[in-house]
Length: 303
Image (cartoon, rainbow, N blue to C red):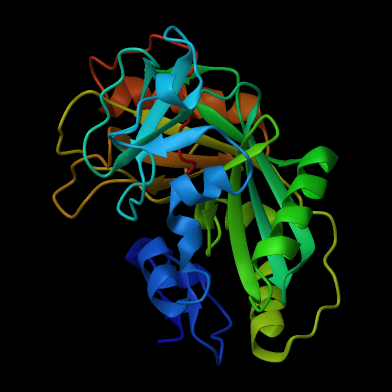
């Protein structure tokens, strides 16, 4: 199958079928792109941008940071949940576990950008930012289709310098003016908000190298239904009855257990409508959910 790593619930979306092999998951992207797979090494990614960082065993203080300087610890490479195991600490007391690294803590807005790239040149951008409400350190919603021209300049320069020879989709997570993660796949949870022409244009680019451009993306919102319970849960799929324009996708395993504490993902063009649907679902299927809104202590992966 030319699309590799497609989640079973999302198989309907990946049309038309390409002639080339196209990765949808990080594991498939790492396997199919040996020349550029180094981007999954987050330590090398940080160092490529001049960020102060080092692997476990190298003291931040010996690298010039003050003992009370904030740092962030993450796995160097983790294809099975990119931000799992990450946590904030202080330079003078940090003791990263083996296989991880620390970096100077970054400040600024967190964003996620999908790009279509041809031989190291970015042709198209789709920016998404986390909303201003958080549940236990995770954003309650994501805004798809925002404008971020500064990120476009940053990403285009990095891609030109590092991804020559690569054609396809990429995703970059940015905090402030620094790329913190790079992926040789897109954020497939956002594709419905990119418009009907997106998938065919992506496939044609990879198969033929042709690019005719795309209209501005329609955009929208992705909302998450979180829980502290292990379930199991029964989640409807498709458009929610009584909530026109709001669709729901389960985020559970075959036994109905949540994925990293999330039961479902809602998609809508209208944030207020999405909130109303989310509140109703919370009372119906998520008794006892903790709704404490907090600011993020690091970063959260988008759906």
